[in-house]
Length: 622
Image (cartoon, rainbow, N blue to C red; front, side, top):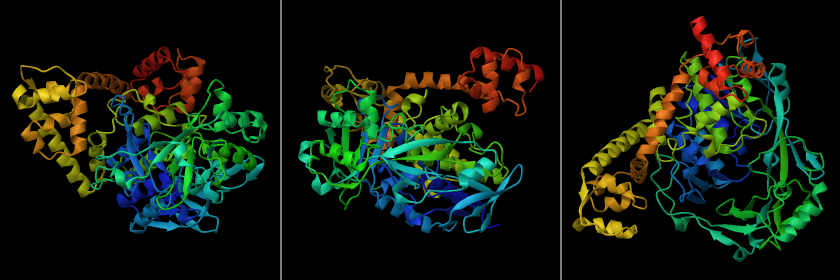
């Protein structure tokens, strides 16, 4: 046996899968087409953002690595959506395109259970029910107990820019050729997807005075619960906001047939929530302008990422478009934009553990499941790594619920609903988003990491200390009264409330909008001297202010769990169930849900179908 686990691909999914398996005591071989590109950020070098930032916190709470990598030396970090409720607030960091993968590779080199091979996988060792190894392009065979496919956007990929078409992966790395055909030979269906990336501009050729500065944020901001060093505002780099001009829109409309997206060269479906600039202009014809961001790619280099300006136009039109933008009239393009098509795998072919339904020992994760983004990929990779190891040990898989994590929402969406376009996590996809907040990922998921053996001793100690501080702080708030003479009116006045002649219980006062726990903390010595971390107090503030809403969400989630408790037999014959509509039979047969709750979430399966399904289950006594 060459390894317990072979991971195909060194992107964000592969990295998390490899570390998870290694930290669970398994010997891992990580295959990469180019070891220098492991951990690369081929598109925007940022981690986090709407919903995605919470995923990174969840990865960290489960014992994963992305949060630690992102906190190492961010170029900029800030909390988004702070004017909105806590259910949609999330962290975003601009990371160093060179420094981030360098740190990832350094950590890999120090992990004794991981061996990195610069080899290409082209086929599998298998029988009719199990995959037990991979065949490399060199002819070498790697025998293993599990294979995790995390090839990202490299399978039979081609880069397209106007009339230019290259058989290539992102950032000039060669495409993975042969693996797609081997998967199809196993009876696994693939389909084509597309993504794109904008041009990079020489910093020294930009007049930043024509843009609006977008700074980072001061404070205790981190993805990892283990982080103790925070990057102050003086150590962060600014981004800048600019807008397209009427000239930009005229160039796009006048040359639209030159874009590979509009002349038939590209047929694959791209990400709906990250369209090309020409797609935005043509789709939203009433918009007079579109916002763009100038974002640094490295701390010491000159490359500026033109966020929001992905395009499939040829080079000469890209030049004209870039020069039509404010501050970029004399800009020098360091790297031209391009689109990339690649093979993905229909997620209906996976179960909730991310194992291929048709084969034991074969798992998948990342963009080949139809997702978009580094964070989604990393979350899937972590779960695939965990569950591959648990299957080896004869243990049940870890399947996260929709009320438990964004990762659980994503996996359930993919395996229950499928996708025909690159799937992007959004807070609107999570019906229990008030329960799935940035601040409480550890309380939701670290007990799972401890239970499965993925939490280090340092993480266990940190979690225990934060939990104790939370309980103590909550008790102090419930027992403390702040009187007018003890600072109450200072708090009320700062928040715009009239003065009061009577005292308030601290936890009651905290429920008022505009009053922060950090204002109250200064007036309660016991709370101030407790030494609780900023995140712990912020979590307590949210739990206090939204206590009623959180209780209702938990009650709704409990009703969902009752449906999830009704298991469906694997060998169920949907065609024989009376009362099921034809569409429902087809959808249920394609997905083969494991529970009644999963069946309820399949598009095309209505409540009457679920009632017929429940009646059938009761009749057969399973």
